[in-house]
Every structure is written in structure tokens, then in C-alpha cells.
Image (tube, rainbow, N blue to C red; front, side):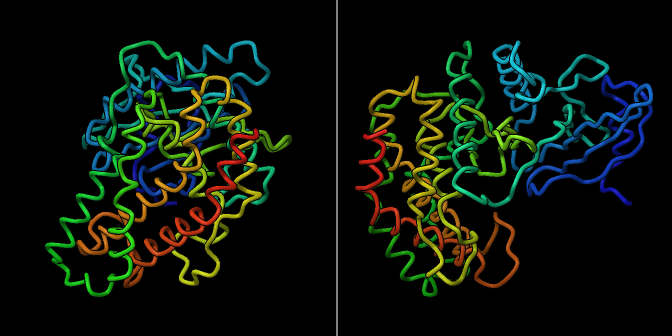
Length: 361
């Protein structure tokens, strides 16, 4: 198999002993290049993950890796003594020079992890029980990091969930209309403008800053093959200071609607309440211990705001000429925007019931 990178050469720089047997591309991520490598260690095969960090997205890979090193070390200390402790937090493999990352001749930053066996990720949720278990794992992840010592983590993507700034970027591209597309997106632009008032609600609520994951898609939790338990939260590149409503909100956005992110048949898009209930119960079963009343109350709103924010980003990119997200057809970003805005509408229709459920749990 022809690999994009010489993984054998990269692997040589990490503290791994035994014979390198080979490597293959791994996972469905779109940002970093990920490989699973196998080694013969005293007659047994052991597997590792190697990842090249995409420095076009993450401009400060060293700051990012400092975060990952601190977070994985803190989590490892918290799970000591638990059954399967080595599978409950990602384990970084140090380089032969003792660092947590290796820089290759081309200037790429690489990291190595121990591969977590007998667990996998799923690109789409298959049941409410799976949603419950994933949300429980994300809530536990936040809880275990709630006492991470100072200093504050680095912002790996500054203003990642800053909705007012995302809205300002949209207004700018509407005015410029460089791709001459504003007329094609008139209803979506009007929807965005009508919702401007919600942009700063979370920022104005004076909620405590937490260590948050910031990319809580369902496929960022590994579920145990035997028990289905959410065993390990992965993809720590966007772990940084944030609000818990962002994390819960992105779970709502990516798990509660059965439709794909670019579904053209909008009748398929909508929040399924049983799936929302599973997320809420799972998340609060672990995170409920440290949340303030204000944080808890704003969880459903987080679902609406994060969905709206991602819709803004797709709309902005469509109007700018598709410069950020990869597209595979004409109007792809507009299709993505429409699914997000349709989900926002569905959340608004059920928001009172969602709030009532959170109060009840």
C-alpha cells in the first residue's frame, strides 16, 4: 500500500521497541493524517497510532501538544486503579528525545498514541442507548478535567465558538458578495439576520470557563466492543477553555437528527426527542455533579446556538466561494447550511419540552 507519509521513518523517532511490521491509514477524520502501525514485540503484536497534525488548521502545533500532554497526563492520574485504566485515557508515546511530539524534515509535527484495542468509534449513532453512553463519557471527561491545575490551556483555534464574531464574518461576506451568490441564499441570509439576537446569549450569561472538548461529535468517543460503554474520549486537538453548553450543544447538533449534515431532503431533518433525552440523561449522570444551575439551565439553548453557529459558518463559506470547507458538488455548503437551520427550527419548536426535561432530571 502506498502511504502518503513514510510512517516507518516517523515511528523510528518514538520510544517504541520491537520490529515495525507495517502501517495503514486509519479512521474517518478529515483534518489530520492518521495511521495505525503494528509492531512485533516479543512475539506479540502491539498497535500504535501516529498522527500528523494539520498545521494549516492548527497554527500552533506546539501549544496544541502542550495541551494534549497536560490533559492526557491529568486523565491518566484520575483513572489509576480503575479496571482497564490504560484504555480510559489516551496514552502519548514520548519521542526518543523525551518530547511529546516529533518534527520531521518537512516541518510536520507528529505524535504517537497507544492504540486502544477492543473498542471502536461509530460515524452515526445507532440507538438512544449509544447516545446515552457517549454523552456519559463526554460528561465524565469534563468532570475529570474540572480541577486541571493552572495555567490556563492554550486556545488551539481562537474564538472557535464565538458566535458574534461568526455573525460579523457573515455580514462581511454578504456585503462583499465576491462569488455573486447572495441572491441564491436569500432565505438563509434572512433566517440568519432574524436570529442575530441569540448570538451573544451564552457569552453574556457569565458562565464559568471550563476545560471543554469543543468537538463532541458522536465519533469522538470509543465504545467498548463488549459492553458498549463509552470507554475513551479521543481527538483532543480542540480541548481548550470553553463553556459546557458548547460541548452539550454539539452533541445535540450531531446526534439528535437522523439526517446527514448535507441532506437535501429537509423533511428528514429534525430533533428526535428520545435521542435528546438520552443525551441529557447520560451527560448529567456524570457532569451533573459540578455544573452550576445556570450552566444546567442553558444546556438546551447550547444545542440551538451551536447548530445556528455551524449553519452561519457554512453560509459564510458558501458566500465567500467555498474557501474553508471541502465541497463535493455545487451548492454543497448551502445544503449544509440549510440542514443546520432546519434543525434550529426543530429545536425551537421543542425547546420548552427540552427545558422541562432538564429541570426534571
